Amino acid sequence: MPNPRDVAEVLNRDFLETRSKVLDLAAALDRLDRAPGRALDHPPDRRLAQLRQALEALLEPGPGRAETVQRLFSLEYDPEWREKAGLAGPRS
Image (tube, rainbow, N blue to C red; front, side, top):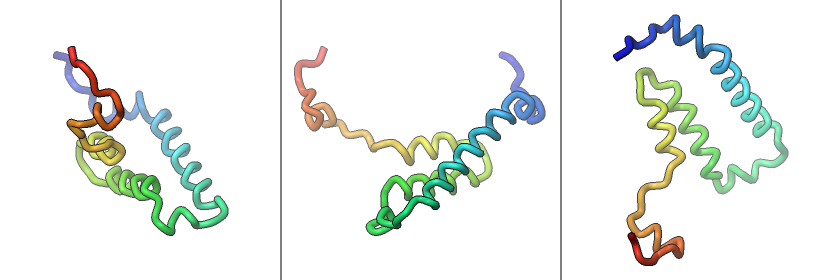
């Protein structure tokens, strides 16, 4: 099993790409703030709430942030999803 990379190695490899993603995110949030109207806040738009929750999750220390953010944007499993989507039929 290979040894995990240390912090310096991860930063050397990933810093520029990560910095670019943070800048993209900042630009997207700026566009939301500059957009006319505040209709999305009344009633609150679920998507904005998810983005805010995800940003808060990113600030939490320790591993597990990716899983937390993925769960924020995912639906809970529904065992009847096939029927609700009109896909019910013979299963193989």
